[in-house]
Length: 287
Picture (cartoon, rainbow, N blue to C red):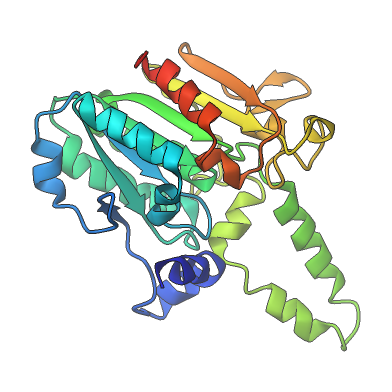
């Protein structure tokens, strides 16, 4: 039921919210069992650091829990004194709206000085981190000073060509009266999906920079060697989009930024592949 609701939210979550439907997911922090966390007590607990994992489009927090490698990583973090949680949110909303809500939530519970905050996002989840960081800078939030690490796993920083292709194909359906009903069906695509087209992260569609004080990890993968330098990439996100690089070079820069490419891995496999967690351990200095 949770997974079905997550898909529904991804496809038409903006409309579910507009209709005040109980099926619309609200932004919340969950435990490893998918239960609501008492965020006030969780954030106040003594910890080596607080780690929050963020899922992508049409997914929920339970997608992380399907992987043995993710569970092993969670257990290792817990043994080292880290407090770990997972975000659940409506992926059909505009990315900047979710970013504003996430920034406000983190400001409410992490504005005071304390243990480091670590955010790990898969796909759209990585864009959500960037959007929240932008809001934190605009609003001068205190939690951004606690953010030590931010990972973007297969996140389409330069947009997702498949959504652009879908948009163009949908416009072709407007050619005849017979195909227009199908175009209206295609237009059901949520604002969240449309935001992925060009990685729209802010209400005014500016390109937010990466906070300079944070350790950033941009991780890309490709379905196969043949797709490492074309628009297919990992099946959804091209390698250059995940690494935020174009023909001119690095689109995103920061003093403490690491770029990693892992071959022979699909977009969804990023959440479970052992190599990804090896990179995360090394990046966090857990070895």
